[in-house]
Structures are given as C-alpha cells and as structure tokens.
Length: 218
Length: 218
DNA sequence: GTCTATAAGCTGATAGAC
DNA sequence: GTCTATCAGCTTATAGAC
Picture 1 (tube, chains in turn cyan, orange, purple, brown):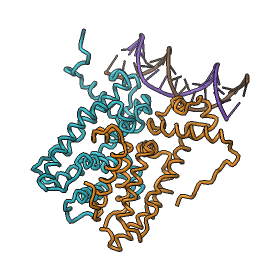
Picture 2 (cartoon, protein in one colour):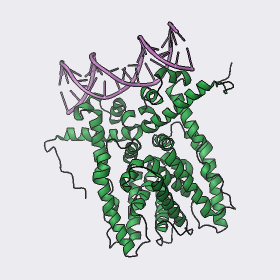
Picture 3 (cartoon, helix red, strand yellow):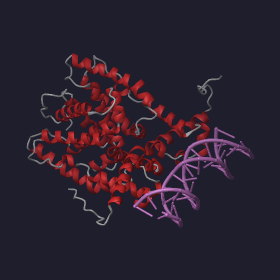
Picture 4 (cartoon, helix red, strand yellow):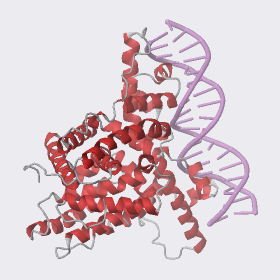
C-alpha cells in the first residue's frame, strides 16, 4: 500500500508552477462564468492560451481541477472579520468587514461567482466545508458579536444573520455586477462606484445595528 | 407597468398546454441548477417525465426553451414594490417589499437561481431587459423614495442602492439557501425560519433607513 | 402529439512523438 | 513538459413510424 495522495510538492519546477497557476487562473474564470458542468476544457485552454492536453497533464480530471480552484478560493476567504474581538469597537470592526468584503467582490469577482455557482447547485463539493470549516468560524465570530451585545456596545441582534447579511450585500455587487451597473447607470465598477457603494453599505449596516454612523455618507 | 400577457395561441389544445407547462417547470429547475450550458436536455426530460424528443416538438431549440422560461420569470418579477406611492407610509411599504421578496425566494427559489445564473454570466440574454424594463421600473420606484425624502418621511438615502440592497438580502436566502441553513443549523427553510428571517430583515432594513422598527424582532 | 431510432458534432480524456 | 492526433461516449437535434 502506498500513500493515497500525491506529492507535497518537494521539488516543483518553476515552469510547472507557472503553467499550473496559469491554468488555475483561467479555470477560475471559466468555472465562475459557466459553473462546473457548463465549463468547457477547450474554452478553458483557450483562456490559458495553452493546448488542451496540457491541462490534463497538470490536473488529471476536470473535477480535480475544479476542486483545486475551489480550495484556493476558500483558503483566502473570510479573513476580513477575523481580527474582531470582544474588546474591539463594533462600528470599526464592522466597517472593516464590509469594506474588505466589498474589495474582494470588486478585485476578484470570479472567486465570488464561482462560490455562488457552487452554492446555487446546493454545494455538492462544499457540504463538508460548510459544516467543518464555515460553521465553526461563524460560531466563533458570533461569539464576539454576542460579547458586544452583553457589554451593551451594540443592540441585541442575531449574529449569524448579521454575518450572512454582510456577505449578501457585498457579494451581490460581484455576482450581479451587470445588474448593479445598469441600475446605477455606470459603465464599470471603478474607484468612484466602489467608494460610493462601500460608504453606502457601511452607513446602512451600522444604522441597521443601531450604531451611530459617521457624518459623511448618504 | 408590466401589461397582462394575452394568450397568443387561442387554438392551443389542453394537452399541448399541459405538456408545455410541464416542460417549462422542469426547465426552470434544470437551468436554475446548472445554468444554460450546464443544463442537459436528457436530464430535463427525466425531470418532466417525458421522452426527450417531445421537448423539441414544443420548443424548437434549447435556447428557445431557455428564453421562454426567462420570460415567464421576468413577467412575475418585481410586483412587490409596485404599490408604493409618495403618499404611502415608508415603513409599511418597505416592510411589504421585503416580505414579498423573501416569500418569492422561499416559494420559487428556482426562479431566483435561474436569474442569478443569468446575471453571473453577464446577462447575455437579458441585456435588453436591464436597460429597457428594469431601469425604468427602478427609476420610477426611486422617484417614490425621493418623494418620501423630500417630505421628510425618511432620511436622505440613495434610492437605487436601497432597492438593490433589498434584492440582495432577500435573494441571497434563495440562491445560497444551503449556506444559510448550515449557518443557522436548520434542516430546511420552513415556516419558522422564514418568519424569523423576514422579521430580522424588515427590522434591519427599517433601522438602516432611519425608521422606527416595531417592538418585536431582534 | 408522442415515441423509437439515429444522425452529426462536440466532450473529456489519452497515446505517443518530440 | 509540451504538443498533434485521436478515441469512446455523450450532446443537441431530427426523421419518420404510429
């Protein structure tokens, strides 16, 4: 019997690494736009500008490539709200959470859309993640919010639903970007749109939590 | 604003009509879960429990069937906020908007997910809808909100972004239902989850708008 | 209108030269 | 590691019996 998993990358050549990253990047875009079943290996190869068989050299199957992309996304996911503690100022911590989440939506919309596709399909590849990683993280973060409530730093509020709400209002600007731009009559999600949007969302979320917003946003 | 749809085929037999509806219903589920390219005509036929060629008898191509489903969804879309007027009480009108939108997400999640898939892909089949139907509707509704602002019935707020926010927080419970249930540690989106969720969202949205929420929700 | 059989082309994946 | 050529199976769609 041998190991069930492959090499822990002890000696991966530079060329291999670069090709792999090019494939992963193209795969993120392709899976994000069309979902797992809708994605086409040929179109993915065109995006990466390499011959199709090269993909199968680095990732044995379509499924395995998909899982690799998913893993990369999850790894860099909810670091935005990680630094909040019971001692934090709720308004500052929530503002940081909203702004960082919106930044992710803006600068890596493909990651957001790929995750959205996976959720829409019922999370066939992320069922374990939802219970094993996400839920403990949320419970831990909910604990911080409940500490704020106990210290009367914030009104009584359902912490899980607050987190889910922040996810929804920020992620929606990535997933439904084309709708948001049409609605705002803007051509692209540029710096000014991002600024106005995050100001609006921070203001709204803080008010929703019963916290005093700063003087600026409308 | 959306006119009632007249029956285009006066001489359509009852059998034809029923078969068509069965196909449209199965197609909504199939396209919602897998997107246009990921959808499979065979799997769709299995859902509808009819032989595959029967689909092509009633709808010439996959694309044409997809468009028929999309049209059906759009037609019954944003009637929730249609009745708000400058004379309305903002809190009541917004509460109705949120609750009706969440009901749609709960009772017809496939419609929500199909629309989400179309948006994620950049709305290749709904570009015209976004500028020709959605935007005028939003502008008209924004006018009502601005009238509330002028009458000091509500704080100054960006009306387009408020509408988009209500869409996002309600639609997210349909599209990311599997994530929401894992996060809330619930098995299904039943009556009690729906009640708690809509109470939470109404309360949060009203506070976000600077309006006085009722005494109940947390 | 409904169904069986099947066509024409595309899909993920592999073999094997370099 | 990279590429050309190619396979077996699946895809949308159609032909034609009933």
